[in-house]
Length: 295
Image (cartoon, rainbow, N blue to C red; front, side, top):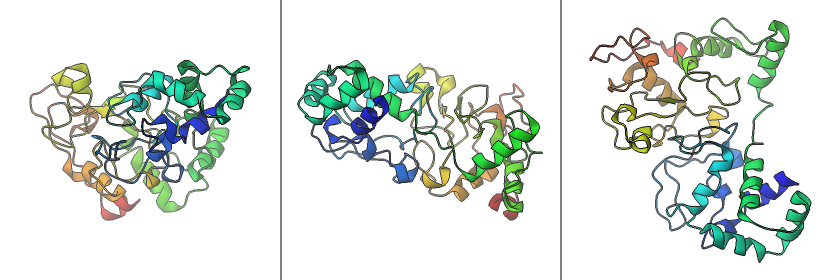
């Protein structure tokens, strides 16, 4: 009942000040709970500054700069943001109280009909954290593998019995030569494994959007953005914080040959795979063949 209330709130345009958009206006189920535009528009029709992140499988360090510590901390920030939904939180409570169908939903979720901001926040978060893909071909394959090997970690030597040869080759490259698995581990619910949850991937020599650097007011963090969960990634184009890549092929080619020698580049993307503590940044050039990029 708590999750159901959250789902109704998620799709209710009443959450915006002029009743024009909802959370679901930017996060489409059929698009992996992201969208398919470079920058979505806020309630006044203005372009937002960053590409919409998928909310699937996330409950830690939310937004591209990680400024929310949990889904509970996240859900009302877009509602109140003056460029997004521009809704005063206290006014929101009064609006929800005036909508007849919410009384029964709050009774079912919380045992009484009190409507307050804490309950609205809790219900929205409860629904959002439930959005976890779990029936993909990858999920079926790793479940079978983990039952065989007895632990839940895969690497470049792993193969899945339900994958074809090209898919297994792609997975081997993902966790090996292509270095994707240094940051992304889709078998883990958060999508990344250990280490820092942010990375500078050398998109630019000088980032106009400083990412974590702006939030932390620290130049050493400039160009660092949250490592996104890549579940349902085929549905969530365009890619990167600024939506600069329209296809996965463009994303692969960036890592293959186009990483810029940014001063804050992740050491995972150094030529030798480690930070040599020199002042010269030498980005990796993966040298993937056409077949490897396709895989």
